[in-house]
Image (cartoon, rainbow over all chains, first blue to last red):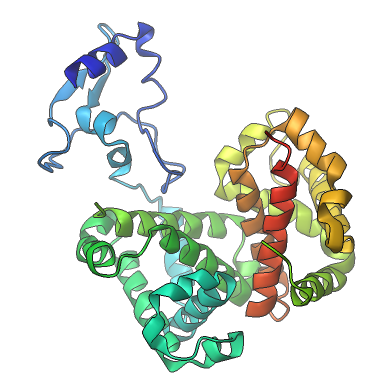
Length: 224
Length: 142
């Protein structure tokens, strides 16, 4: 392993690593993430990276947490939220009817992407859009999901911890492909747009897409 | 994925309702896409992407016109967009993942301007249609 790292770092001028300090293996959930070299925090997950910091090419003054190289997704651990973004999130959320919005988002997920129904065999009648929209289990579950989303909003700086148990649950017990979190996030955006109209402008959408992306990422974090 | 006759009816209905606003919707779709998915800007280094940009408006018009054309020839989207498909394969080579992003933003624009129009069924049909358009445009990539 150290040989691979050694050869990466000896790349002339460290050009491989420059501009790649927040390597992402999937679409960046926190785009635009600040492009600073990842700090090597005490993420301490045994068996996933040796936990040593590594100096960049001599004279470069750069150093890279090994975590970033061995676990690309970790580089975006700390998502940064500007004051404006926080404002856009809370002002929208303050006006959301969690029960209605949650029910609608889940119903639309099951209608627009019917294969997502695979997780809800015990929900009864999902045979038509009308049936899905009127289904009380869909409504209840939609409310549950969006209520949980509200927890994310209260813990923007600590999402991975907030969703740690839920992530394990979705992996180990529910066996939900994380792609479904992204699908639901996109649907939620559309429901919000329909609800807020012109008030859901481009920067509002951008902020909320970032939020749903980060939530999806946090929910997928404990997958193995 | 196949568009059912109900899907086709729904999509035609959407574009009939949008009517003359299609060009504005196209521009707004791009504006939202650039704001939400900054990586999409990499395809437009030669554009002024600032607010109210005439280039973005002009390009939005083209994008919208293509969608309208596809909707008007919904039984043969591949035929209707054949030249555009060639262009994307040979010259533009926009990575396929970006068509989904554009599609998402178009849905958001429709939703924000016409919430009553975008019922769940219409939403599903329009999403399928946008996927189909993306598939056609990337079909000749390799």
